[in-house]
Image 1 (cartoon, one colour):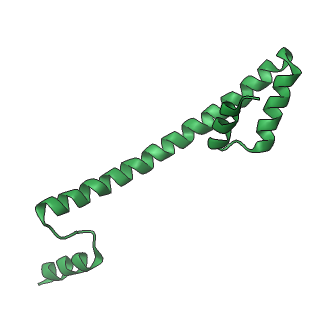
Image 2 (cartoon, rainbow, N blue to C red):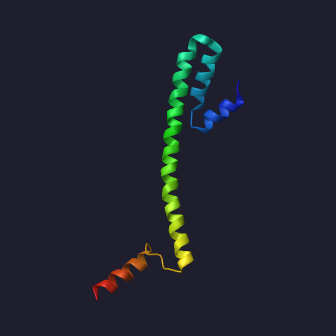
Image 3 (spheres, helix red, strand yellow):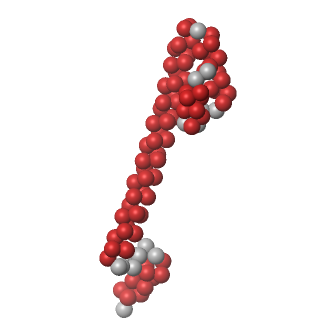
Length: 94
């Protein structure tokens, strides 16, 4: 068995029973290549979807990091803090 492949598949969320199924197919031989290909193709797509989702999360986090860096550099209050929003609304009411 390929420990590196098992570790990779587990890290990308493949359940142990599917990993076992994959290796059972490997043991069965060349006739199972199309089935093994489909298993890997499905895991590849799942992993690409997860990477895309993580990239979207990272974009949001990067925005917040840049926002806070700007506040720290320019010594400004955080306009997203509820107390600052309320104060700004009150000053525009007058």
